[in-house]
Image 1 (cartoon, rainbow, N blue to C red):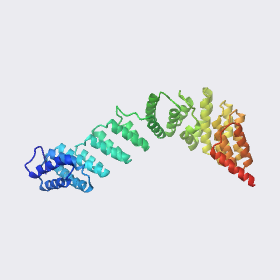
Image 2 (image 1 turned 60 degrees about the vertical axis):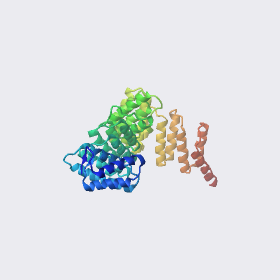
Image 3 (image 1 turned 180 degrees about the vertical axis):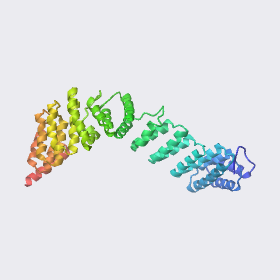
Image 4 (image 1 turned 90 degrees about the vertical axis):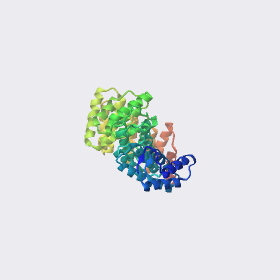
Length: 429
């Protein structure tokens, strides 16, 4: 059985051609088409190329599972015969592969579809771009990003990736936090007319790349952000520091923190730098390095905000690694170096005290506000009051609640509920 360039006199071929053309119009009698096609495969008759192409195209549109399964069997036999032909012609094989591939997509047999695409490459036949895109979209919709990446690599080696395929793959990779796919798209397969993600997607992308410690890609993407938004803000600056911390490039992370960048908007706080604080907590060598930066940086910089941020990062990192007893003396050292604590510094001490259940240390930490001209914040009062209630120091809790009220701070529902329960406990005693 071969595909020929001219129509044959075989009446079955003529009948099949007519049946296919009729089906294109009224979508009926697929059973007759399948019977005629099966008879041709059994008889080994040559099939004109245009008939083979038309059958391959129509077979994927059959509406029921039985017809689709029969079409798969027929097309598979065609492919087997065509592949063994000494006079192999690419067009009929390509169209036959395409028809079978579309049936697999329709029946949800994605593994077989991928296997078929690899078979196409082995025969150096290639695959129609719209069919490759259809397979890719199916894989991405099923969150099968590993298989999608394999397919993209096959496409990239022999063809090109359209902007639409590139952009859709990127969006799915961002949604699934798949760094491997993202890295491949921006390094190996970066295309000239790539799609610039929306700010929401770009933000997720920057966070993911930062967590991977890929500072080369982060720099590239941050430049896109700055170009789009005309702003080098807190978000970018803090992620830049975190990117170096994730890569364990500790010196670079600290230098980025200390030197800073021109940026607009809210200041960076210790809560924005969890990777850096965790790095300090993870190994004493990083703690020692950070401590060495403190006096050195205080001498060469007039940026009080960055100096205090460095202090807070060190204190938070050390508190996580159990160096609580050293922190009061560290704070005194910092003050001697003209590094002033701020609200974040006090809150770090208070959280550390609350974790250990030391109410004396908690109240002493809060009192640092008054010795350093720091205005107490709502989170400080909430932590203090809730911790005292948990320790059944109800009188002390109400004292600080009165102080919070005098400050004009709003009581959130969870705090009001806790105070209500504390009042009931106090009355029952």
